Length: 377
Image (cartoon, rainbow, N blue to C red; front, side, top):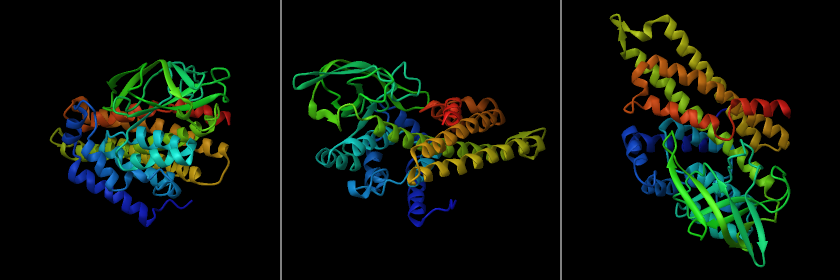
């Protein structure tokens, strides 16, 4: 496989790098996390102006091309900078489901404001009993005349407090884990019966718990055919998993770089600890783990962009997420140990990077889950 970047991908990568260098240092990031909304509306509009919000969408929908490889290039750089803007929630998950399920009229109304930075979305799909299975849906959707009544509880809803619409997965028929019977509904967050409790995750993102109590929506709120949303949900979930793996990869490489630099300045017994052979070996192992992870994440993205079977794509995604999970433990723990106690202070970014990769490890399934899923295919 050819892992070299195209000219467009290099330009995309450089645009993110330039933005981070000029406008998104660690202190700026921390000040954004401390705000009520948890992201910068000004930077979000800048993302739109730079064209970043169009990357996961096809040219037919007005996007950059819907390439998973392009997406990983950008998410890699996002991970290095610890960005907290709701790219995953609004663009990849919310926008991805609209692009996959909605009719042309609805896409024409919803996708342009997403790509222009004027519309925030949140996918309300995860439930307490689901354990990484997006098809485990207990939330119900019951037809009542010309209305549909939604009842249920969703957890870990990224960007829920900032979204104008929730994309709610609900079951119209079938058993709790059945593939058939799942629909996705576009629900305004100010609808009667919608209760959103926001919280900040361990890595600084904005998330929430959503309760739906007799929420009434029209049939037009359903995206796609009744009970036929499972395939689109799984497809978007796979792309989001690769995006998370790429973001974790960027954060790991940032941890490696910062650890090497720290070892050159931290002195013990009158000399830099970076001269100690034992630590050199450990940092070499960190580098190897990052390189192994990089190759398999890029391969997974290329598989998603290919015409291969769904099974082959799923295997590639699970292989990447599994490898990233093991790299997170190896690289993350070594970075913390080599830095020592200072790594766990709020003032040093290494500790925040470790929190981010720890959160990304369990998002959409941890290493053990994806290892088992790969073996079962």
